[in-house]
Each structure stands twice: as C-alpha cells, then as structure tokens.
Length: 87
Picture 1 (cartoon, rainbow, N blue to C red):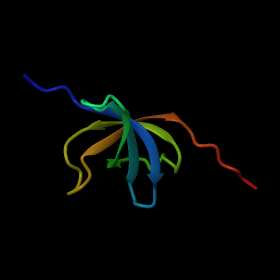
Picture 2 (picture 1 turned 30 degrees about the horizontal axis):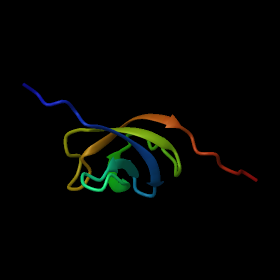
Picture 3 (picture 1 turned 180 degrees about the vertical axis):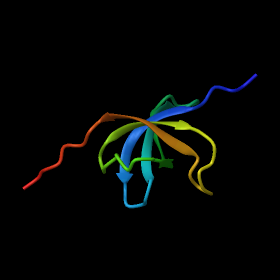
C-alpha cells in the first residue's frame, strides 16, 4: 500500500529563487509530560512552477518527488494572498 502524501500549510518567507519558495510551517503541539503548548517551526523549500507565490502568501504544500537536492515539496494551492501596499 502507498502511504498518504503529507500536506502542510504555511506562509511564504522567501520567493527570491526561480520556481522555488521557502515556506515556514508552524505546528502547535502539546508537550507529552508537562502539557504546555509548544510552537514548532520548520522551513520547507517548495516547487512553484509558475512563480505565482509572493512573500507573505498563505499556501498549501504537498510532499512530492525531489525536484532538487533540498526541494521535496510542491505548492498545491495559494490559500490567501498577502496584503501589499502599492504606491
């Protein structure tokens, strides 16, 4: 049987690379012994085929085949656009 593909949601923190964005994923977990809620942050490099993502966008990424040595995720949807101040 195949494993389910992992899906994460996070915010784009960098879009300077060509067809690649860095997405910061924040997870809230409960400490197993003390019960305190802890924030766990991880940064993922995700493939963005059409360079549509901008900094601050909230995106959904799914695990996929490796596109490069460090790029193993793919942007599946842009959930919310960042508010930009244009002069």
